[in-house]
Length: 400
Image 1 (cartoon, rainbow, N blue to C red):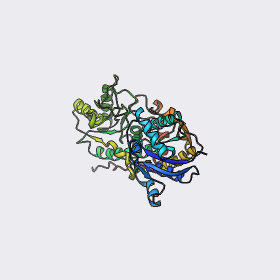
Image 2 (image 1 turned 120 degrees about the vertical axis):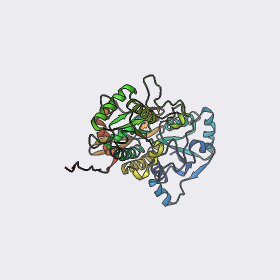
Image 3 (image 1 turned 90 degrees about the vertical axis):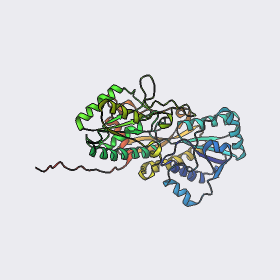
């Protein structure tokens, strides 16, 4: 039996439920006969290399319980891309603290980090069990039906579009359109989710544009005109990662992060939402609004999905179960058995199959024109979100 200490880290952007996964790992590790002490990386792999470790095994009970209802990254996060020269230092710290169980909660870049650390340790004949716990609001990890964090961020987006749509419809004599931009660099899961805001044909959103499809400005303007003629106003949802046929970002962003991913939004140039707003305004002369929440939806705990919180905690528990079996090089996976009733099982996916890859929304989840979702997507998303509020409209009982 491999015995030693465990280290847990959080990487990438925060979510409403990432600390619930942390609580799950701590809970499982506390009861593991293989794990002696439990440490946390303060600010990810960067903090680990600097030996800034937090004692997680001796945290007060109320703190551990409170993690399940606290958004953000409790340990502090990092977007450091591990370089070859980092590995000797990482191994040095692992040995110094007798760390044999290595858990990271994060997305595809994080899974790459675990994968590389685990492979390096194997090459150096240091026994280490490396396990990934999935986390990303983008929902773009392979090997799992969905990722903890996605449902809560999607729910936040849905409620934003519902309320923004109610506002815009009542103001359509002043502002004829509204553009809502959501995060989602390579995949359109978060934008597609906003379709649940639409209960009747006139409700927002009318149009959804996703990075899975090449953006065509002329088709976009045709879509806008068609919707405006029907309803007298237009609600557009767009993903931040929209690109033209030549690969140019619609945001006009040229800035890259440490992982060579395009940075969207104000830091990298004009945003997608602002550009779509300008296209509509310039072409039709309409006045309109743009709404860009950026990272606010990532840690919107007030609107978190109950299911999401519970599954995030369970993913932490499952990670320790895999570790107890000394199965290294895996990420916890959620496998959907049924959508109605909603039933899932927990399993594992090879890190090699997950690392540095982005899972797109399947094309069958969109309509033929690529500007809204299909019924198949509704079947996928509904169980994850939970109950939504019901808005009403006045009946048009005009005085004669």
